Image 1 (tube, protein in one colour):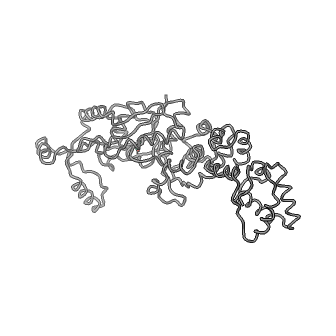
Image 2: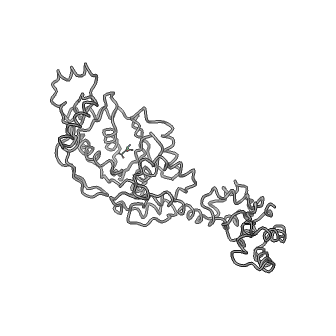
Image 3: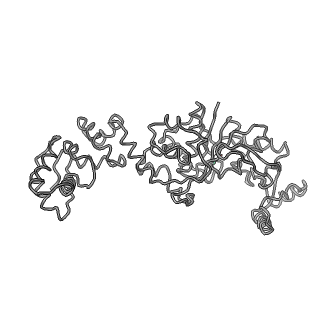
Length: 440
Ligand code: GLU
């Protein structure tokens, strides 16, 4: 049984980087007919907000990334306390009392001596009396996991064989001074409790994975399969971390990006497979192969979402748009034809309303100075709607004879007069949809 999870912290809105993680885990579960868990990593009560938890669910729903089970870490604190007790019993958990300033000083000294800034385990040498004294002076300590100083190895689903020297890593703090359980422990307890079999996350978690493997084993469990995907950069390879806030999924949605466009890009970006528009979730899942993803940073350009969105919309049959067109007020007898003519000529759904207004009320003509007399003459010869499939050919033919214009000089001013725009659908198809003449 394959079980994966997506574990965002509800401390902000999901962005494209989060989506990549969510999508890979979701596709692994769906491809295997397994279970996908949505887990909210909300042990930090100050930064976690219900508003963000709601937004995470809405964003995933918008994308159709359904989950089979939802869990919140804040509801599982007793499980983490029990795991902490187990680690204590096994001699793998120790209390330390250094202040942040003291730790900082230690790190600086180590760096000055050219040593890696790894916690020196001074607290391990404390006697019970010394600990009691420190506790009386400073309050509770933090709890650190005692790493086994050996090499931690795993075969990563993306990065291949990994080997990390545990001695190069500080014993991780798993419980803060105020008693708050930190992500590293909570995540391990959840992953083992829920039987998670595959964990895909960003390569910023590689060191976490090393320590988590030891914690899982200390608790008596077998680690899941791990894979770490590369992090996203901007189109020029620049760090995206600061800009990710502007690439929130809800902003892309507000900008009219279609879910299938976003999913099609994010499901293949950074892999050997081409980014192509996929028609539906089944197609995304079918072609997905984690082994095709590379370790190199992955360039992301939000502009790539626009052509994919346009192509997705162009691919939709009328049935998929009928309700939306009815809501815009396009009459039923006109709507199928309206969609046929417009679907290749919109960037987002939001373009449909303005096009319908142009057809219903008549366009405000766009007229270049040099074309003024020509267009005024042309509009004077334009019959009242309704128009037929021949109207454009007849009208432009008559104007060609009258003015001697041809080609672009003939057609463009007339298009701009009828639509108020320089670009749009085939005019021969457009005219029969017009309900009104251009507004004079
Ligand atoms: N809440 C963690 C994060 O968002 C989860 C990491 C993980 O997948 O274990 O980074």
